[in-house]
Amino acid sequence: MAVTLNVSGLPEDLRGQRRYLPFLFHPRGNGRLGKVPHAMVQGRLIPADVRERQRWLGLTDAATLVADGRADGLGLVLGPDLGVVAADLDGVLRGGAVLPWVQGIVDELRGYAEVSVSGMGLHILIRGQLPPGRRRAGGLELLDAGFIALTGHRLPGSLAVVPHRQVALEAVYSRAFPSEVLVAQPTLLASLPLADNEVLARLRALKNGPKLARLLAGDSDTYPSPSEADFALARLLRFSTQDPDQIERLMRASALGRARWDRPAGPGLTYLQRTIHRALALGGPTLPRTP
Image (cartoon, rainbow, N blue to C red; front, side, top):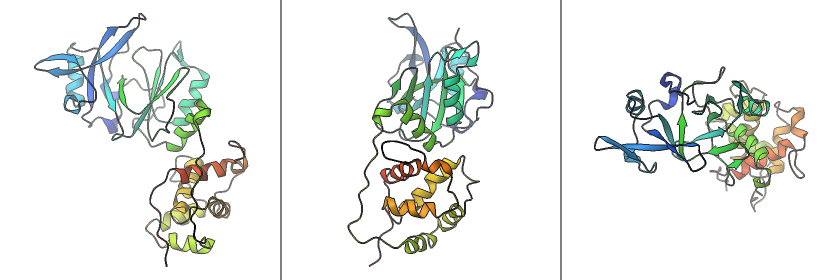
């Protein structure tokens, strides 16, 4: 039996977006019902191409079509400009309870989580960027584009907003698609490296200097998890030096250090080294060298 729409339970930070479409159920060849997005054209609903932005509706208009019985439900159009990743998990509820392996994903992502339209699956929404590669493994599919049907029936304890969870997303992805995770080899600068104290001095003089100082002092209270704090420090240090050995040396001199840093996390890498390589592989601007 399909789960009805609960508009008040939908993510609070996405309600103002004009990127919703109603859907109608359509029988598939396998006997299951597909959710076909529709657009309102000249007063009637017709199947929609979700890439046509001019067809998208605000939440109120899309929900009204559902409330009036003209549509079976609604969904959100994902895309790079939104920056939301949806974890679609099919058939993972048994008697209303979440399967243990799925509960681990729910706990790790700590995002907006809801029961799917079928009543047997889950959707978890977070903000982040998917690595390139596969998107489906077993009962898990990760989506960053296309159409995702929503119900607004949140799991107990689920967030009412869609949080940023890049580190957690990468961890879940690396376990689901281990053969797809390649550690990028950073390109080292040809010039002589800066001394450790010079790297820190240049960073402390910038706008993010206080943030760097707090992380070096072991203050991670403003981050959702220690892993997020580790990654943030690696990214800050990367702005001044792209030498992975130097970043590791500077991070080990900080008060953030913990036993997990030395655990194996891939061929020939510790957890800390893998975190540093991810921070380097993500790219972005760097601080120009002084003459």
